[in-house]
Image (cartoon, rainbow, N blue to C red):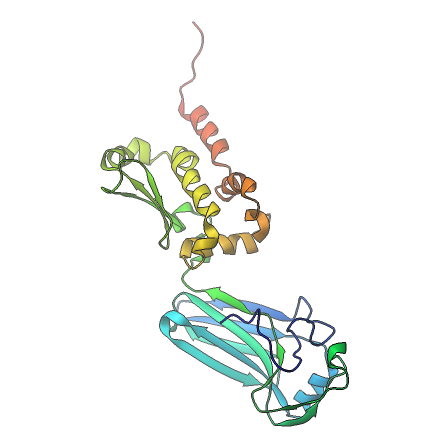
Length: 281
């Protein structure tokens, strides 16, 4: 569900500049705890519009939260007179992205609704509101339940190397949930040699960084894959990263190095420590 571009025939707080002042950056607070059985989401909503708050206090309006998971066909809506929700979802009930959309909606019909925050375009206008009509639309947010967030920094969480008979050269496939590096049989046999396979520094500074750079350059076209959602989460949540780091293609090679924790430096250190000391005779 995408509410970014909706338009309704009456002014709504949170849609464009229909009602002023706009929602603050802290309009939605979202916290998650998880155990072996459940995900527990705690959601806190905040806005400062006295006319709408008064309607809630009078029982004319209420907070609501819709959440859905497309892969498991889960779809629910809960309501509350308070701006807080605690949602417990069994792990077996969700798979993939869980979408959350929160609102303030009309509970009982409201005749001639007006708001002192109406945009000047609505000056003097009133609206008859029916049960279910929206008064506030909060920013959409989501959680990807198929990502192991505790292992995101390991390249193996979003990338794998496999043998392929379909290509004579190394090929990168980014259409699936992992970035796949396809090696021709002869290459793959050499890769499986313990000496080669055990040299992660060399693999990261060659195969892995090239595949990751290619993937980052084409990430926008594959945002529904797990590897893209994994990287997107790291950019949005890890210190030192920003979701805008990938906006400029010229920054992509440096971004790939940072995501892999400077593979070239690790390569040089590996060469130095693994090469016997040589002295001039």
